[in-house]
Image (tube, rainbow, N blue to C red; front, side, top):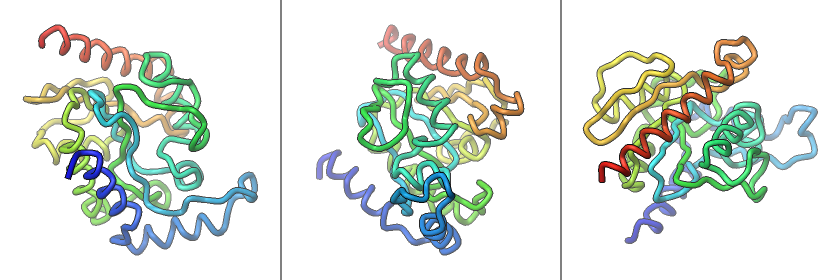
Length: 226
């Protein structure tokens, strides 16, 4: 089985996953009982796969799909405020084809970048249980193995950082802007671009932009060292 087929098989397993009854029931309920502003839209309402460049050197790991973002549109960081922040930064630093990520087939494509998450279903109050994180852990591990070319990993929030730390055997503490050198990867910690952080000023645009500036510099350094 070649790598593309392996990804297709993995993604089929993810979309069909029903390991977490609480999450599965929640995303289906959200898709049925829509918020007013999206009442006329067809929600995805299933677990979400990662997406992007299969030869990516940059991997971005988030927390989970948003209930009315990815769970509605069928693509992570698409159709919500977190996606707005991420798409704009990726475009500004040459990792995406356009500065907005609104819906599938909107022309937004990633370059040298792959986006995924620790948990594949939107959790109530954005708080997955530990067993739910454990159930999704194998998907993240398989993705990283299949991607093959990843050199830099951005962890958006502590849950994403904890997942990556477990995956890579890292013993360190989360702190925004921290860079951790692993034997194969450089791991960058960042606050998640959720409204909880961006609207309170905990995460300012200059702090957010710096994460991608660091990523670009690390990737450029890796190319020079090859």
